[in-house]
Length: 422
Ligand SMILES: Cc1cc2nc3c(=O)[nH]c(=O)nc-3n(C[C@H](O)[C@H](O)[C@H](O)COP(=O)(O)OP(=O)(O)OC[C@H]3O[C@@H](n4cnc5c(N)ncnc54)[C@H](O)[C@@H]3O)c2cc1C
Image (cartoon, rainbow, N blue to C red):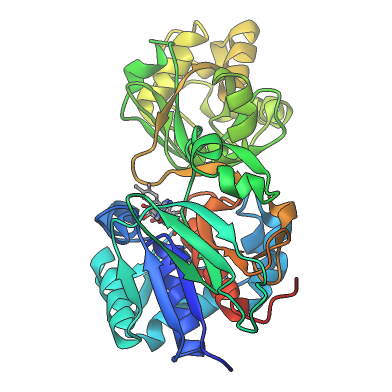
C-alpha cells in the first residue's frame, strides 16, 4: 500500500493508542501526533490517583456496555472487536502487567501511571512516530481534487501561530469538551456537518444545604441505594457522607446516569437514599415484627440490626423522634413508621455539585449519529476519524473511560487511511 501521512490531533490516551496501532499496521507511514499543550498524556499521569485505572475486569461485552450512560448502543460492535481482554493482552504483550482490585478496577502491577506512559513513549520511539507539542489545531480544511494528476493530501490542518500542514487522514482525539468549545474551537467541525451535543460534566459528587446530615461527615455506608428523585436510574454501592454532601462510588456513578437530568434541573432536587437496600418499605415493615420479638427487651440505640454505622443509626433514630433508650418492644407505631421511611426512603435535598477530583469526564461531544461505529470514521467527512472522549460517549468510574479510549483508538487505527469513499 502507498505511504500515507496521518495526523492524530491530541496527545492523550486515545491519540497515543491510535497512533501506535496505526504504526503497527503500517510501519512505513508518516504518523504525527499534534498536542496543543506542553504535556503529553497528562490525564493518564494523574488518573486513578496516579495509578491509572486502565480498564475493568469485565470480560462480558453485554455487562461492559451497561457501564456507559452514553454510547451503549454505539459501542456494541466496537467492543466485539476490541474490549477489556484485548486491552489486558495488548498491555501484557508490551510489558505492562495489570492486576485487579476487589471492586474490579485494573491497574498496572507497579501501581504507577508512569508505567503506562513509559510504555506508550517507548512504542512511539520504536515506530518513529513524530510527537509535536505546542501544536494546537484551530481549523481543518478539506482539499478537493486539482486539475493535476497528483492526488493532493486530503486535508490542510491549520495550527495556532504556526504554518499549516497537510495530511491524508486525521484522527481527532482532543478529549472532553468544555461548554464553550463547540462554538469556539470546533466551528470547522460543525461546518463539516457534525453536530456537537452540549458538553456538561459527569462524575461529580452532590452538595446539600442540609446541615444536619453533614454533621455525620466521614460516615461511610458499605452498601446504599440512591436515586435522583424523578429519574428512573438508581445506583447501589458504597456511599460516603462528606462535609458538603454525599460522595463515594454510588454517588459518583449516579451522577453519570443522571448527568443531563441534573444539569437541566440546575443541580437542584433531591436524592432518595435507601440505607439498607436489601429491604424496601414494605419488606422492612414485615421484618420489623421479627425485630420486635427478637430484640424486645433491648434498647434500640444499642441494638442496630442493619450493621449501619452507629453514628448514622443514632442520627436516624433521633430524626424519627426516638429516644435511644427506648426498648424495641416499646416503640410507638408512628415512630416506627417514620424510622422505616428514613431507612428506606431518606430524602436529601441537593443544591449544587462538586467535581470529583479523582476522575471526571464530560458528557456530550460529537454526536454519534454522524460517526460510523464500525470504523470511527466521520459520515460527513471521509478520512476524518474520531477517538476517545471527544465523542458523545462516557462511562461510569472504574476504568471504563480509558477502555473507550483504547477501543475507539484501536478501531479508528484499523480503518484510517483506507481509500477514501467520497
Ligand atoms: C483526574 C482524572 C482522573 C481520571 N482517572 C481515570 C481512570 O483512572 N480511569 C479511567 O478510565 N478514566 C479516568 N479518567 C478519564 C480519562 O482520563 C479520560 O476519559 C481519557 O483521558 C480520555 O482520553 P482522550 O485521549 O480522549 O482525551 P485526553 O486524555 O483529554 O487527551 C486529549 C488531548 O488532546 C489535546 N488537545 C485538545 N485540543 C487540541 C487541539 N485543538 N490541538 C491539539 N491538541 C489538542 C489535549 O491537550 C489533551 O492532551 C480520569 C480523568 C481525570 C480528569
